Image 1 (cartoon, one colour):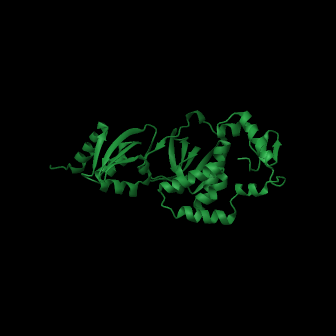
Image 2 (image 1 turned 60 degrees about the horizontal axis):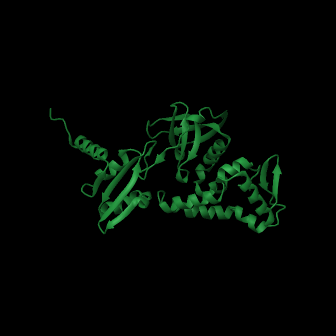
Image 3 (image 1 turned 30 degrees about the vertical axis):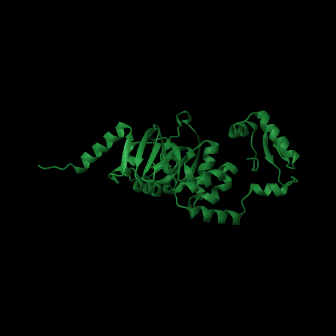
Amino acid sequence: MLDCKYGRTIPELSERFEMSYRTVYRYFDTFKRVGFVIDNNNGFYRINKKNSIAQDISQLLHFSEEEAFILSKVIHSIDENSELKEKLVKKLYSLYDFDRVIYAITKKEETENIYNLLQAIKQQKQVVLKSYKSGYSKNISDRVVEPIDFTVNYSGIWCFDTQDQSNKIFKTSRVKKIEVLETTYQYKSNHQVGMIDVFRVHSFKPIAIELSLSLVAYNLILEEFPLSEKYIKKKSDNHYLLSTEVGNFFGVGRFILGLPGEVEVVHPKALKSYLNDRMKKSFSYDTS
């Protein structure tokens, strides 16, 4: 965090690492004892790499161009929905500032857009998602939003849509260009980040479910929805229990209906009712 162009304030560091101002200063003292020089420019603190004795350690704060290229190739060789990829990205984020790893964990054509979104979040600025391709309305339009936070692997971003006056996820791959506006956040009190379930459905009101899976269902759910693995417990060689939360019944319902006889709903009853209604609609036809 201190290896940056303009520096960080004590309150910013305190909030980021959930520690007191006093603890932040103690860390500064430790850094100085091992050879780092900490510059203070009107309350903005940063590491002075030129004057620091511990230059070998400071090299750990950087990815070289070659390292970033190799890291990018390795990460993108992993399946998009792999839990391993999610863990790797989270570890990189915990070790480095956003700007430090963006070139390594995003696709080249999306890097500039994501970088601009990162800057807009930091500066609390509104942006225009130029020529956004909506998967819901099938329209292509410019959307003025207030970016809040990224989903895993930067594949989407939670935003407050100023037109719809609602929080939602926009896919970064569907944005042609990001235009950062001079207008600061106007609806910050309305900002809210929801959850994304293992079936890739997002919501602000999660619903607890429990499913009994056969071996066939277990193998398929791991292949199609790898992030579900952490919520599954093995009961026997042909019996597995999935306990998790979902955004709504659409994603999990589609999975269950695609495997007749392989999945049993333990709870809730509302999910059973949803599946029965879907089954009736699927097999109903007009006899007139």
